[in-house]
Image (tube, rainbow, N blue to C red; front, side, top):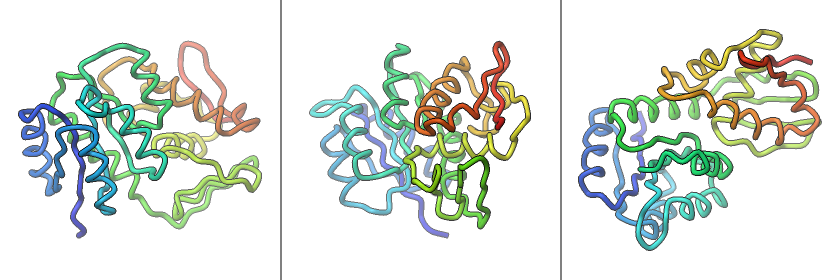
Length: 223
């Protein structure tokens, strides 16, 4: 099995060691960076990095800027860590294509579970091609086309759309969506699903109307 490399950037040496030790137990190799510039240098120097964990408050270059630079070149899954719990920070993270957003302090076991869930889903390779209402979702190529035009989705947006299509016509609660798409019990409120749905609708253009809101409950994908 290929070695899974994870880039972890954080100016706190203690946190880097803690996370590295927990991920090492899952046979993952952690590449450490102590600031944003080092994180970018190491990311672009190693094409085999499969996931990036970024602290927001770092010297020389903060996590937001590192995320922006990586997103210009790569769709690698990104997890953001922050000591803040400001909703604006979380929304900014999703706008930049962040796949997960975790507030410090956090349980290392939960972080590992989220890393494993993201890697499992981003590496899923099926030959199935899902077609519905002008949307074509190719799981093998991990590609989505709307009326023949490719659209750029983050890993989590892709997984969310896939889950909606597979469950077409079914009323899905926010909790059920989070537990299935994120693949773990989500410890937090459900606004993260609303943020992802908003972004997904926007990227789907007129097809975004297929995602119906069920007020006070969740969503339904319906044509």
